[in-house]
Length: 338
Image (cartoon, rainbow, N blue to C red; front, side):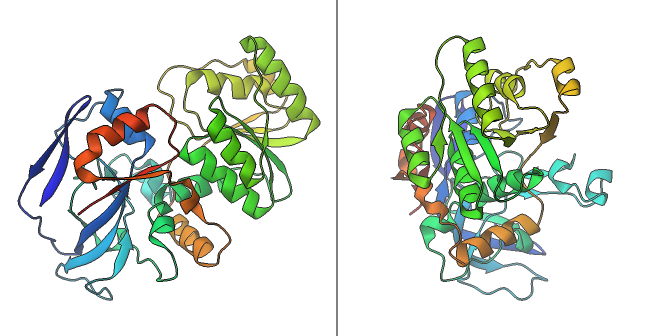
């Protein structure tokens, strides 16, 4: 089969390797499409390093091609989406129902072979079936939509409340879309004007202050307070925006950390304590509930996350696709796999 390996930062190598075989409990999936995630871009740019040479990519869609021993209730040709984070079920976090922070978690595209390839082998339960009524375009965005849904549900904000979203990458846009579909009022902050326009077309209100950092904090703090913003979702994944979120958060609100900034951010403990601000972490999703919820929301027509796809490119152009994605102007590039 054909696989795209990340050889080193900024270097993708396309190679043919032996076809993997499913073991007990596994299925082999013939992939047709894989979305590029922000984490793929960080790996490509060398911001995060892999312990071993591997293929990256985890937002996969395809069909069951082979079924391993012991798998029941699945069929060849069944269309499935990849759920790429596999908790161990044994550590104390898994035992407490927190598999999303499992210390032994297997991650497709990092610790496990990724989805920028023609085939991938995974435990059957991590390849949920996709109903025929869901389009391929919506289906290939299920994984990042589950991330956005999990983040929204991590907050105490309820439909009808006002929320703020900082950063309109794929997760920020999907969170905006899901929240609007549920009846939240959404205020967005983003530097890229094209992504601001996309969020506004969904029904969001843009608040994009300019000036010094202190002036930006002041402007957002005043508007968020006036609009009774209940929760601020930091989706940009930078130390600066995490600092901005906590500095401008209204009294009594929550700051939900969705972006994955790796550098230290700053906050003022006195403000957090005196104003009763809660900092809420959100990472990936809970298995299997968040994927099931996402599938049902799409199947029912409540959300249509495929709007996020801005470009399709073939697997052999993955190098160029990752370079384009790193520029930040695409909302979601999807790789088609021959």
